[in-house]
Image (cartoon, rainbow, N blue to C red; front, side, top):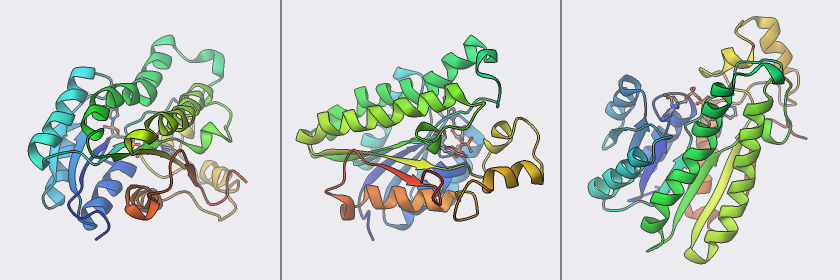
Amino acid sequence: MRLAGKAAIVTGAGTGFGEQIAHRFAEEGAMVVVADINEDNGKRVAADIEGAIYCKVDVTNTLQVRAMVQTCVAEFGGLDILVNNAGIVQKKTPLQDLLEEDFDKIFAVNVKSIFFSAVHVIPVMKKKGGVIINLGSTGAVRPRPGLTWYNASKGAVVTLTKSMAVELADDNIRVNAVNPAISDTAMLLDVLGGEDTPEGRNKLISTIPLGRMTAPKDVANAALYLASDEAKFITGVCMEVDGGRCI
Ligand SMILES: NC(=O)c1ccc[n+]([C@@H]2O[C@H](COP(=O)([O-])OP(=O)(O)OC[C@H]3O[C@@H](n4cnc5c(N)ncnc54)[C@H](O)[C@@H]3O)[C@@H](O)[C@H]2O)c1
């Protein structure tokens, strides 16, 4: 059991990568808060995991993020691991065509949420250390066209991960990121520009040396490693889980 007795929050755990991360952490002994804005999905995932609880949260709302942290501490006696996984993508579009409101939403969900979580989580973790894992993307380091503002938000995640790691090292809080390549989750349709065709999928896969998309389980296993004591000397790393896409 690599996370025995650890209390973890996984945001956006109602589906996709977050759902798999929540399951994987629980398999290794963690007590998991399944945090998601989507109540039906969050409750479904929490019900599937023994000992997990669901917490409804909009990660762009600082009061709700504070309540999420308080729920974890009240239910599980502390908070050891936070996975900032909730994120949204933009529909593939020329960079000058994105609406201002969509730009703001992307940065609120993908970047500002990490600021809010830091504000509320660091005071709790400071007492005995902890682990923060952020979901970046290969788009941060090897951007694809048509996703410029999403890529930029993930670029911010990469930079803030390294900066947080350096600033929080004295408090024994490790901060790392996982950079997945494209995956067959709810986001795929937008990345494909709204039309899911075998040709569109093959075009994406053809740029990945290992010849397939990232699977949610690949991301969950990487997050598990980074959360575990096996990675206790690893901080500030943004780990590509991408079948070689970024080479
Ligand atoms: N799927 C990919 O191809 C891919 C590739 C690289 C990185 N990522 C990143 O991985 C993370 C997870 O992606 P995914 O593919 O599992 O996405 P997904 O769309 O399948 O799931 C995202 C989850 O986040 C939740 N969510 C959205 N906005 C929220 C908010 N304001 N507050 C709380 N929860 C909210 C949704 O309800 C959903 O359950 C994201 O940060 C994404 O940018 C995804």
